[in-house]
Length: 174
Image (cartoon, rainbow, N blue to C red; front, top):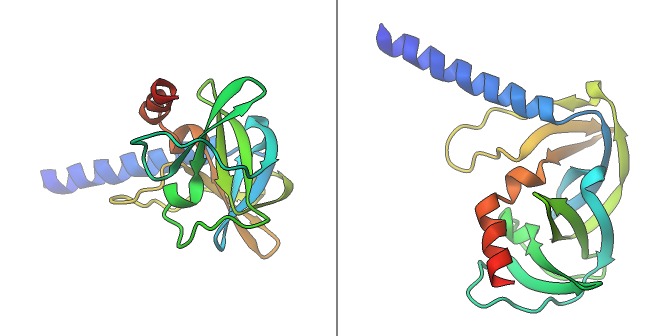
């Protein structure tokens, strides 16, 4: 009997976590971008600028998805390839490849994406909670899923995706 009660407690805790993540995806403007065939959105207030891709200076012994750093008007900005970080099938540089410069955890970070689409103004009814995916590969950084016409847009919390330890390591190497 205790096992069932304990299991119910765990399921209830997971439901609460899912609701909290959904609550963090609020109505507002989101920049939509593509990684492979998938479309994502990031809160526009995090976006500082969108730049064409330029090859960064490599950082020795960095993770494969950390492409290096660039000098952005005197600020050394780490460049992270989101395609590699999220395990996309391919991560080729094309004429559409751009770097979105973001404010993440009090730092400036650039993320490589396949293309930016547009800025969308999403209202509350358009945003649904993400599915509760417990276990390996749990996408805690997906705070909601928005329906935009016939498109599905995964709303991403960059603070969750790029963790503090990762960014601190970049600051030390950069």
